[in-house]
Amino acid sequence: MDITPQSLVVVANRLPVDAQVTEGTEGRTVTWRPSPGGLVTAMDAVMRSNPGAWVGWCGTAGLELDPFTDDSGRTLVPIPLSATDLEEHYEGFSNASLWPLYHDGVAPPEYHREWWATYEEVNRRFADAAAAAAAEGATVWVHDYQLQLVPAMLRAMRPDLRIGFFLHIPFPPHEIFRQIPWRRQILEGLLGSDLIGFQRKTDASNFRRTLRMQLGMQTQRTFVKVPGTRADEPERLVRAEAYPISIDSADFEALARSPEVQDRAAEIRRELGNPDLLMLGVDRLDYTKGIRHRLRAIGELLDEGELDPTRAVLVQVASPSRGRVELYQAIRDDIESTVGRINGSFATIGHNPVIHLHQPQPREEIVALYLAADLMLVTALRDGMNLVAKEYVASRFDGDGVLVLSEFAGAADELTQAVTVNPYDIDGLKAAIMQAVTMDRSERRRRMRFLRRRVMENDVQAWAHRFLDALTGSET
Ligand code: ADQ
Image (cartoon, rainbow, N blue to C red; front, side):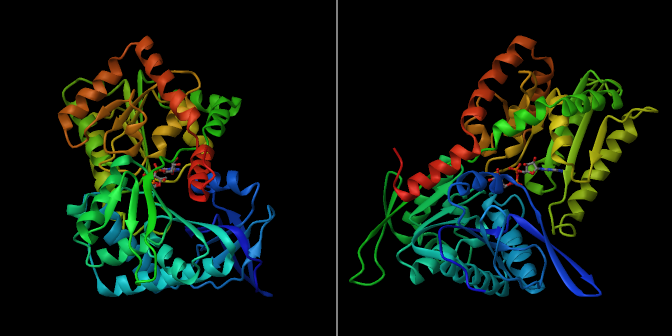
């Protein structure tokens, strides 16, 4: 099917909808289910006035589907990915090479030449589809580490486009980045953009320094001078700077204020036996999130009698993200055995000090947990931003609750009134938890006021507009 070229094109690994395939007597039927997430919400805001096109994978291996227009007038362009593509591009190069390396090597990255070949091939498929979907002079916004080669591929085909790229995860220091065998190709891929956005200022400066060290390029403030590849091609200026992502803050607050969610929050506390202290962790099950360090600190505080195992409880929601179930079995086993050990030592009949919820929870339940929790523990070893920290704050319309936040999460740059921690320092983490537990009400409320101002002002809509305004040159 031919598609009408659009003036705004979003390119991301996933479409904002998932295909649901059913095989019936009359053949195959495909229905679409929205797959809401931060990025979808952000783009909804900017796509309302300009529906545009969204290029991404439909969520089912081997499924080839035509582009179509959804109810809001958006053109959705599904990219087919085979089981091998998923294994080598997504699970392989994206999640087993780039993900651990970009998170400062918190797990050892693996490199395989066939993974890289597939990464290039899949990036090419996304770039071709984006080129076909973009009208003359269109704005194209490419997202994240799975698609770093798309900007240069796209520019080579379509020099008329304005191309933006946003990296949702950290960009590591040059000394770490340089070990990638295909480092030059990745940098050149990104430099096809006009604007490259990062979560933190340090990510942007790591990137600019890498370009100086690796490619001998010159940078000036946030700009990089990219020489032409031919003698007749002029130098280009590429901007690389921080655009910290956020959440739909008003939406989280509205949900938290709804009577159903408030009732559920009260019910959660009752179901837990009305503890004096309810601590909460909400994470995608991943080794970057520091769940093990958190459990270790809580286990020791219980051991030492600092926390009363009959009056304190930690609810840890940690579910695997779509499609990565097997890869994460080892982390799940590790968490479950630690939780088992803690509960084995301290549980009484009717009360477990740690509860691990492995099933993904609906958003209403997550927000009810945010409202019910006295303490939110975000102890990531490395994290681009960490939206959970911002969601907790946005949900606390009552002005209470304490956020314990890792300094290695991007959110720490803005949320400076959280109790910040270095999660590698178990004693420091224990001390921070106890500081949060014993904090008096007026101090808690003072800090939460500050945090809420930050999160309510810089929401995801503001983030998307700021990025697009800078990309299209319409910033004020
Ligand atoms: P993630 O690594 O997925 O995102 P995060 O920013 O915390 O991390 O977002 C997770 C989202 O999933 C949140 O909206 C949270 O509520 C939800 N969630 C987590 N666990 C859940 C569970 N068990 N059940 C239901 N919902 C759950 C990547 C980067 C981050 C960056 C974001 C956005 O790794 O650093 O902040 O992209 O750019």
